[in-house]
Structures are given as structure tokens and as C-alpha cells.
Image (cartoon, rainbow, N blue to C red; front, top):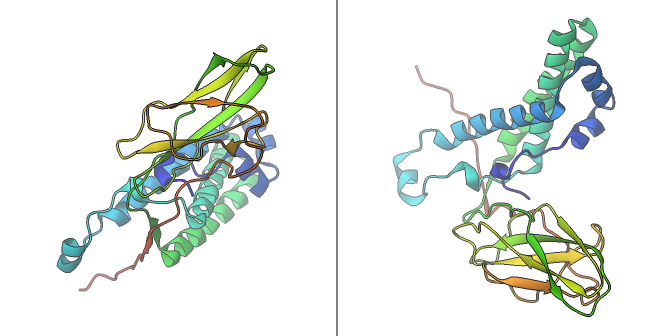
Length: 254
């Protein structure tokens, strides 16, 4: 699972799968769906931060360190919550932009479902990692002389922490070169806690297999040889929670 701070947990396609008429309404009403997703993500970030900032008992202050937003994992419950929040924001805008009553029931329904999703998130708890590894930026690709056929190749990388946990893999990068060249892969802007990275490469986006047997150092350069690895792990989605923090609603006394 990706970290929440890696960016929005859902895509335009995720929303379109949930609501088949979304893209048609977006064109008619002139609504930027990506902007609504970003806004929903920001609103969830504010709510998550409130949970992280809540008052804790003295004993907990001693044995548990303060938790940060970048430690929160984008669990399925958070993804569902963000999906419905984005849809509620979308149909709210559609209603006010078009002033058409047909959009208000969808706005109301998605607002209701957002509250249900939030309650389920609270019931499930907040997934936390101890040593978060952010998503890698796309790799830097180059070429080196080699006796290989030219073509188009793709690569993605993922950073590793000292415990061997891998963050979400980067968006793939691509390069095309003529015969007599090999693709080189290097990383940029390593996180402060990164001890190395893995390389996933191939001639197809559907077949990016891990190429290195051992993690590469942050400043390492990997030379990809087509066909050397034809199966293995694919780019990962990120870290799984190390623990689940319960979220308990309290009723003020008085």
C-alpha cells in the first residue's frame, strides 16, 4: 500500500468505475475531475491530522512517540473514503454549476456514503508504518554501448529502508535508442532513510520485473540487459502497516 502522503489514493478511472456517467457530466459542466480528487485528498489529510493531533493520555506520551501524517498508510478504507468524498465534491459542483436538480440527489447520496466510509475507517483504525519510505520519483534513464538490439524500454524503481521495506514504486520512465545500446537506470532525490533501491525493467509496461538480486546503493547505476530476467516480482504498491492505531471517539463530560 502507498503512503497517504504519496499523493491522491484514487484516480479519475477509479471514480469513473464507481460512477459511469462521471466523464459525461464533467464535459457538460466543465468540471476538472482531477482537481476534485486533489481537494478530497486535502480534506482527508486535514481529518487525519486531527486524529493524529488528538490529546493523548500521559502514559501514552511516554511509551508511544508522536505519529506523523507521513506514517499513515492509504488503506482500503481510506481509499474508499477518498473516492466517495471526491464524488460528493464533484456532484456538488455539478449542481451549483448547472443549477440542475437532477444532480442534487447524487450529491446527497455520495455525501451520505462518505459518512459511512468515514465511520468504517474509524472502526478499522489507522494503518501506521514505523519507518515510512516515500514513493520514488521516475528513474533517470541513459544508454551505454552494448551488443543488443535497439528499441523502447521501460523502468521503475522503489526505495528501501534499513528494514528492507520498499516504498511505492515510481511511475515508469521510458527510453528509445538504436541498436548497439543498453539502458542504464539511476535514481535521484533519495529519502533520508533510504539505504538502496530496486530496479524493475522490461520492454513492456506489463512485464517490468525486478532486475537486481541485491539492493543498489542510492547513487548506483544499473545496466539493464534485455532477457536477463524474464520473471519475478513486479513493481510494488508500497508498505503494509506495521500496526493499526485504534481510533476511539470520546464523549466530552459535562
